[in-house]
Length: 355
Ligand code: OGA
Ligand code: NI
Image 1: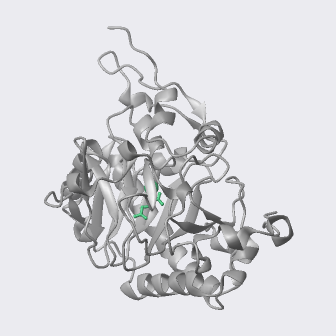
Image 2 (image 1 turned 120 degrees about the vertical axis):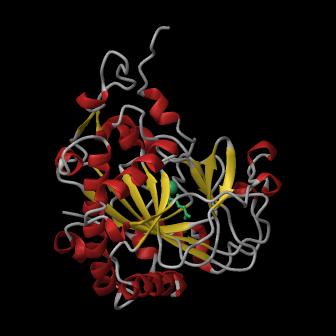
């Protein structure tokens, strides 16, 4: 049974949320990152283009070609965008509209879901993990499990009025897309199409909405500080306001929104399962001076009790196991036990290989 946080225990939650109409007016000290850790816009690259993969031919005679494009992108940085992915434009647009409505309605209608417990599955929160964050991220977010829809829909926000209906439709489309990509990535790993789907056990699919209010000084803070996503794979709808940046060869690269595309970020579990062949992408989001930005990531990952380790087919004499195995729950607890710190959790599971 899923419980939601109670306002009674969070009397000052309204004051804490970024989306309360006040907090975004000036940059309070807790949002100011130290000089060496700020976005440094002068160093951001605007001329590199990440792969845009057309999924139109995935289910046809050219499947191998598309799978190979996906494979290359997974190897080169675990980041790409997809078009002709099958999720109808109308479903994407309705989801973006309802997300906006959710964060633009009075804060009192949102705060009932506020929680500071990162393991609370349905919650509105602020920053990343306020119990651990040294510097705060300039965002609020909503997140909740969304597959199967019928199991979780009654725990979702009741306001805005159409939220459940619209997010339910969106979640079902995302589930289809997840399975499509998982099959292709399994093949890219040299496995049967079902490999990842079967290995992830009863999967978890978490729908999230990030709300980044306009920020008077985007040089000082982050919408979300550098990190890799801890689960398996993330499908992000980024709307039309830019802000996402991906690390490529040590340089931050701006990812300009492509209408109706999904951004795909590989998460840490795929880096481990592929024994380091595929990379989880390192990314961050900067704020925008004039416009609030909304992004809608769907995080897909294994169930908490799944044992994660490099796939046997990825390990041989030439490619010794780079990571020790663990229960996924252990990984997530470690992830939430600290603030956002790049890929440091992955390092914790690395096996030292003597030269
Ligand atoms: C995230 C994330 C990026 C963005 O929520 O994990 O990386 O563009 N978001 O909002
Ligand atoms: Ni992320």
